[in-house]
Length: 232
Picture 1 (cartoon, helix red, strand yellow):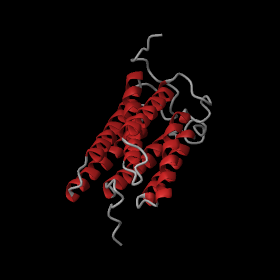
Picture 2 (cartoon, one colour; picture 1 turned 180 degrees about the horizontal axis):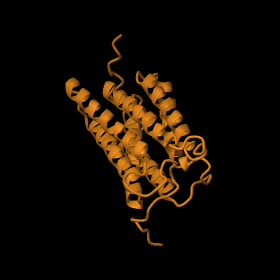
Picture 3 (cartoon, helix red, strand yellow; picture 1 turned 30 degrees about the vertical axis):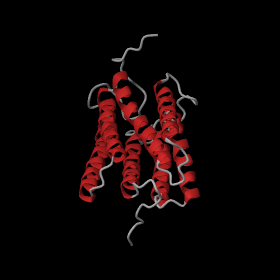
């Protein structure tokens, strides 16, 4: 079956009541918050002279997430949906792979970290682009993000076992993701009560989660367990 990449996406978000670039003003504007966070993170990295391939890759993907989300909530077509989900799962996969590879216990080498990243990326992409979701539309299609939640839980457990100094930041990011997942899931069910929907709150809380994850990667970049602890 051939995919019509110019097919309009309707009924996916509460705020979109009509076609057109301005059909989702709150969702579109809130998409730009990730871009702002990424630029601030870039300035912070440059000041600390903490530029690493992992950090730069994640900041680049975060910027792509913002652009892709803006395209989705303005053009609202299948190609825009692809532009939205590709960088999201790229970010999840790269972050998970780097976290596993940089574990002080060396739980995995480069090959296993790559396999994990590719597996998470493919699983997330398949769930995001399929025609129906595992539990229909009852949670606004949020089940597609379950692999990301599993990565967060697994990563948090690994860091807890290692007593890694970034555990507090990762725990905060995981909590923010759970909150953002709730906002995304409630968008359609609460549409009658909140005509603007709650999807823009998913963007805001996800933006904060991205910022905390980037902060954890920037602050604790070492892979030998000797990363500096926070100064208090």
